[in-house]
Image (cartoon, rainbow, N blue to C red; front, side, top):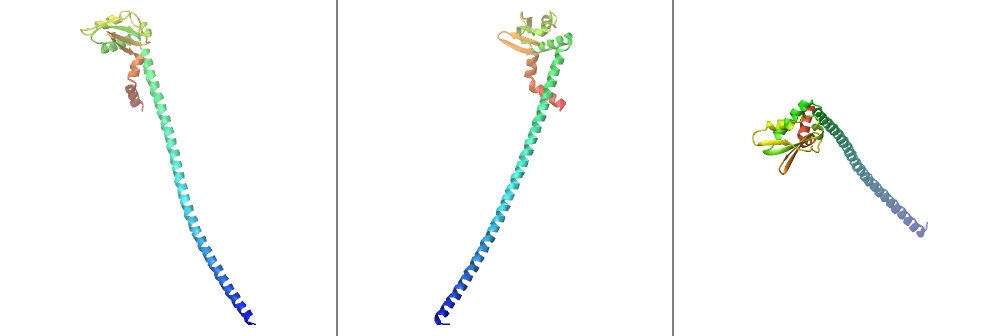
Length: 195
């Protein structure tokens, strides 16, 4: 082998050795990158899984809360319907009292709400038929001194109950108005009884 061939062989051996070292270094670097990527992937998978689990829990909780709200609304609506039916039934029982009992009820209502001075009483259209002709004079005779009532010439623009009129004022004592004005109180009473 000549000197040139020897130099070429040395260069080739050195080149092969350098190439092997570069390839080895590249493989090591690739393995490091792959290991780091695997760690990052595992961490990302864990984070995504944790977020997904939290999201699923939140969705399930919202669904349960929504279902509970729907149930509570349905129960509340049913209770309100039962309460309203009970109040309507109470009003109908009042309307269906015997004429004497109904007259006693209206008498007590008028006596309780009569003001000082002279006033007039307009009777509801439906009640006008049920009450004796001298009903108001009988009630007026039971009022304490200083209170007087006369029957108004025209019926009240209500079906059941009376309207008391005094100079400059009127008090609507219709059955519908009485129930409406005491709605919250009556609702609470019915609710306590039923539930």
